[in-house]
Image (cartoon, rainbow, N blue to C red; front, side, top):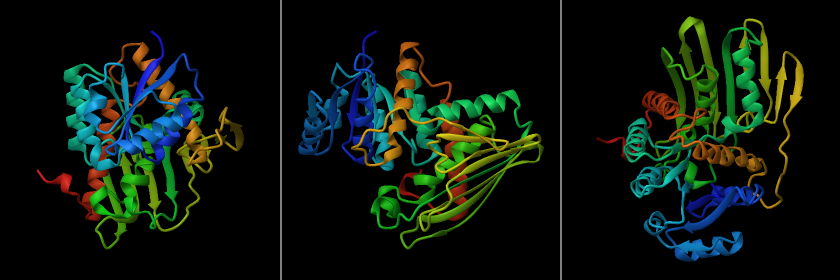
Length: 335
């Protein structure tokens, strides 16, 4: 198999970073062959900037391009379902940005479609593919801190000046934007186990989406995850796992980790390369999920063993319940 042939759906901020990072990987392994935007001029601009051979003014054209092997869907949340289904029905493999759906029902629809078409589908929870995350999972399997009993995680930044985070019509809200990182972290630590109960509290803005929230996930055996997210203020943005024999801490920023502190001893996992023209400096870590997708495709896998379909369904079922308790609903929740 030659290079993994990427098609890019959307021409937005995170898409730019994904394209920049792909260039830092071996060209014989990764190649972007086409990009699509609902505005042809925008797709053409990105194509020129990133040296992409083909630019399309519709997602349908990208779906029908025979050169495209896997599509990166970087649209805003409400467009994930229709875009992903379009590519799946065209027989394309898909890496869809998080959150993969507006709710668990949308995720199940996408998973079922991918399984029926026999294509690869993964939610782009990039956090799970950092070397530090791999080491963390290894430490937990080895019982380095005994039984993990309490997980803490928090993600907070002032974000109210960005409409895509605050407006309900475009899938705004802190839980779907940043709280999902805290939830996925707890799900990873507790190895995909479903919590026995969920307690959530928070505050909504005038459009009816959440600005801030705290979530407690109660698991069997007295284990607990305590998670906080905020679009109002910067938080310490770290995470920790306290066990019966010790503690593992992940300093800022836990969702793109480069350091673990294991029972007081620090271990560094620096990114190998930080391109200068990224919108977000930490986006250099997108390289790990891109290479993971390639390895899955080389092995003929239809889902990732690290970020499985079941993982996405569990995360979104938790998000749904948190939103229910907070009183946040979207048009996509209507039957």
